[in-house]
Each structure stands twice: as C-alpha cells, then as structure tokens.
Length: 57
Image 1 (cartoon, rainbow, N blue to C red):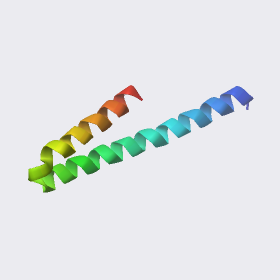
Image 2: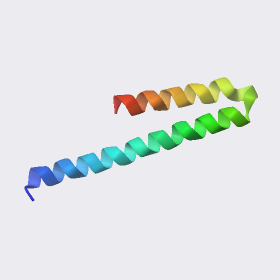
Image 3: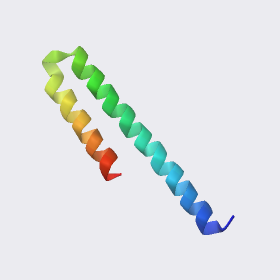
Image 4: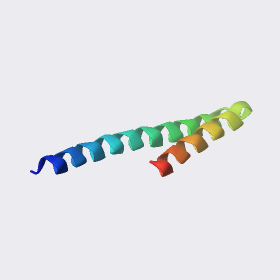
C-alpha cells in the first residue's frame, strides 16, 4: 500500500474512534437526563455539546 494512503487510513480510524466516544458520551448524558430530572438541564447541555463535536468532526 502507498505510505500516504496508509497514513490517511490510520487518521480515519483514529477519527472514527473519537467520534464513537463522542456518541457514547452524548447517549450517556441523555440517559442521565432521563433518570435525574432535577439536573436534566445540565445533562442535556452536555449532550448538545457532544452532538456539536460529532457534527464538527
């Protein structure tokens, strides 16, 4: 494989792992918001920030 393609593939794998982490964090914040209504605003804000991170990659 051409070295620059290998490097690109590795960068893509790394970015995909980072995006998976962001999605897991957003899901966790949403679950906590549902289970802790008193602190719901904080958890929803955290989920919104994680979604923003996801879309901006």
